[in-house]
Length: 287
Image (spheres, rainbow, N blue to C red):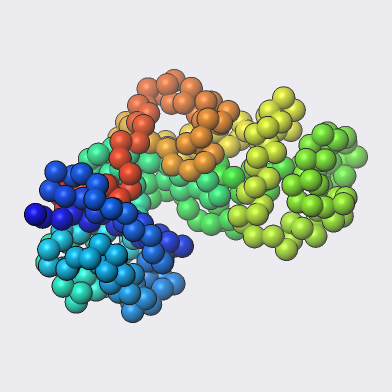
């Protein structure tokens, strides 16, 4: 029997699914991170070795597709291919985690994808070329993300002090409760000692207070930023289908609803995810 392994190597963890030649699931694996930008080659090799031990299989009996964080450059792809070869894999394909995400959504090497979770970024693939828009991090970008929404809400609060305007007491209480702050001064200290992920949690306050003008303004700006991200991808690819990744737009939120409405007006097709990322990694073997 021929075994096929699909691997989603992330920055914090690696997940893998083992299939038989009929693409029936035989088992799952969870291991350490696989981002060459922050993890040594030896540690990545150890993840693959533990994967093989977990499934009790030899590398030469497995076809493996790997999508890994930080593998967007040819040099990093070559490093991962060298690791797989050293371990004993004979049939393998390596690409980025963005590539397998696109394959998981579209099931083919063509289409767009936007991510809106803690951060935001857009990807598209066409004619075997991967395109990227956004993703410049929280200092230079991340518009349309949970972080940007949380930061925008925080700015609205402190700007209200400068402008001597009222700020909704309900929203302020929600902010203080979520951050375990006693007052706005306490919250200010929380902001400056918190990381991007913590600030992104404030987006939940925006999403549950959609009747307030402050939150409506942030929501509309988020939708516009995500729409612009899609249009930037469309401009360079002329593609017309897009999928969503990330809690802000994969979950049933007002932002998802409004963004889908905007796509309908633009006559851009929305694609529901077809496969898992691990299955998407196996599709690399077909290309």
